Length: 151
Image 1 (tube, rainbow, N blue to C red):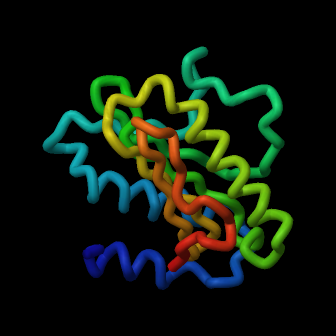
Image 2: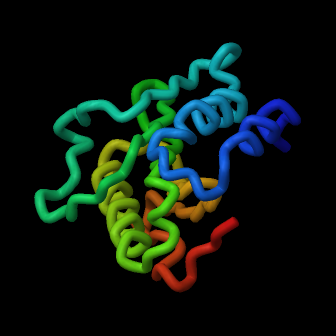
Image 3: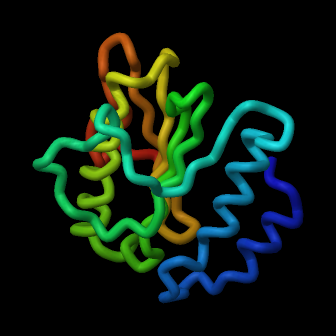
């Protein structure tokens, strides 16, 4: 459960904001709270130049994502969050592009993850879509955009 302070920070952001980076700080606070980076070995890394093993395929479409936070443990990704501009939720084309980017990100992490299941979240404003990938099979959930669970 999120603290009241974090909920209050979300409430301060107008739902129709056009400021692309308005959610950076709040989601950074959420991730650091969930993974308790002050008391554990988890590290939250905002978008960074990916090492060669993490590189996405060259056919990955360009998506105007705002920022990606990757949570790592022992230099291996255990979770990631991609924050897209809030207005992208209003267009099927940008939702499809964000879905494509999430799937490409999972593929780029496949060879370096050491946990049984990698989780990722795509965010557009206060709307979240949850994804996961099984290490053994490479199966991603949801299997299609239409099966995506959002909040």
